[in-house]
Amino acid sequence: MNVLWIVSVLAVVRGATVQTGNVQWFDLESAQKHPEQLHILKAKAGINYQPYEQAWKEFKILHDKSYEDPEEESHRFEIFRENVLKIEEHNKLFHLGKKSYYLGVNQFTDLEYAEFVNFNGLKMTNLNNTKCSSHLSANNIVVPDSVDWRSKGYVTKVKDQGACGSCWAFSATGSLEGQYFRKNGKLVPLSESQLVDCSGSFGNEGCNGGFMENAFKYVKSVGGIESESDYPYKARQRTCAFDKTKVIATVSGCVDVESGSESSLKEVVSEVGPVSVAIDAGHSSFQLYAGGVYDEPLCSTSRLNHGVLCVGYGTSLQGKDYWIVKNSWGVRWGVEGYIKMSRNKNNQCGIASQASYPLVP
Image 1 (tube, one colour):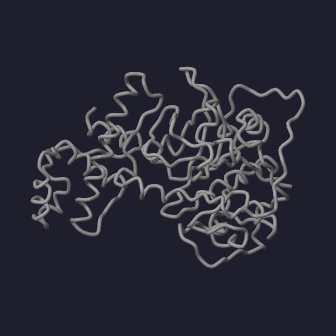
Image 2 (tube, rainbow, N blue to C red):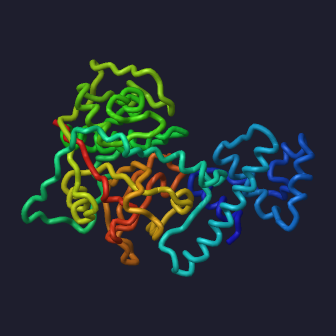
């Protein structure tokens, strides 16, 4: 697969203009200012960089990337090249029908795996002692074959947590937004920054991680949560500035879904709305996911590191069951910020291991 095709398709789909031309350097301006970089690249004998140079240039434009110095840029270019090779090899298998999902260039393509995992921020070691109640299944409930709460107005636009391990806060507000809509018929983006800044006494650690249930318990304790417009997101932890007079949504409690049961999660999602879930997202395949039904056999059901929002489920034309999951890495990751994760595959990636939702009075 041509590397330029990967970036070009990505850019066209997302509304960017792709420039073409005979580019002899991965950053022509940098090469002119720092000719020693050309020597560094050429010194890496046996590696053909030419096919990747234009792709690198387009990547930096599309994702607004800049680097501190030529050495850093050279390092990032090498990581980019290696990740694009992974994408090409994986997508060959996808086109042969051996993989159910494909990979693509996104904002994380210049990051090593060890750097990427910092964008996960789930921490389950500081669970607040107060337990959520357990979900009780209704008798004779008819569970539909597919559900997508986006089409019913329950889900706000995809947000971007930035370089802050606050996935747990976005997962929590997503579930809260859905439950507030269910009760009041109004879809209001709620404040992740309030949770990041103010819920430390409930076991959360701001940009260093947290847990959705702790966030629900915090909101219940302080009497509510502000809107995103009144308490905007800054991708960093600041001094708590919660103003109770600006509360939009309140919480009376929280509910846990039966751990490990995908059938219970399906029932709850169909009946209640979007549900906060914890998953194992610590794989390069997740980092570079671009579409299809994600199926990662190396995923753990217990090593959970990322908080996301389950907004529905369904079955692909190829017969693969999936969960519809909203991430918090912006619209340039995945399919406009979403991923379809395998369903009915022994709780793959632990999606049903720690699912919960708030009760909104």
